[in-house]
Length: 121
Image (cartoon, rainbow, N blue to C red):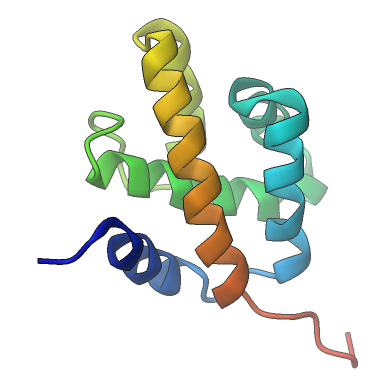
């Protein structure tokens, strides 16, 4: 049986493909400074420069759903929006605390596995 660290790492390894480290690096700071809900609202705002952040948070939402911290989050490009909606409408403060903790732990692996910006870009 896999422990939580292995589960986080396995999922992050799959989702990190194509993600740029620069985008993922911003998320933990945003979450710690502003909170998970405010960060999700910021990321889900439809602006092209925020799309890489949204992709990373979609991966987080899918992971939290697999862990049953969130319920019925689909693997699609609206997972972060669904996560925000669920935490606001159905979540308790304990759910938000657990989701925040797991998000930060998961993002540590997503950062490790995401791609560095190439020097030619």
